[in-house]
Image 1 (cartoon, rainbow, N blue to C red):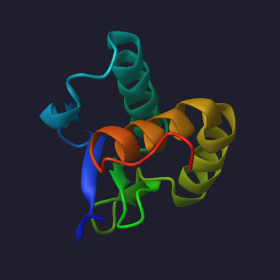
Image 2: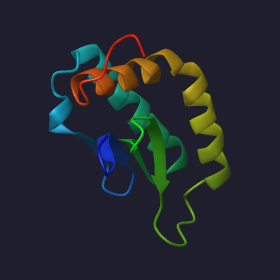
Image 3: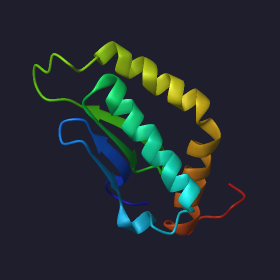
Image 4: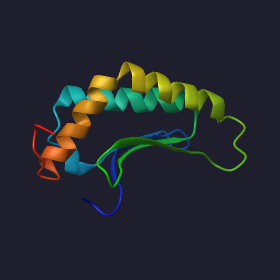
Length: 111
């Protein structure tokens, strides 16, 4: 497996920017759009910076950071929003994990 985390995408409420790793340009446009909407709405709702990364075990993880003493960042809302997204976008997130395992790590579809 990879020895470091690989960023899929992220959004930053401070700079009002969205980022998609160019290595994932081959994703279908509707998936890229859904990721963008999900990330941008998240930071719009709770603030901070949201990054979706693949960890060393090829799991897709939500990483959240905020500027120190940011009064606009909603830490409790952040945890609740992530749980909501994991529930509502479960199929998408699982498909993205499978995509990463197959196309980036050369894994099999069966496992």
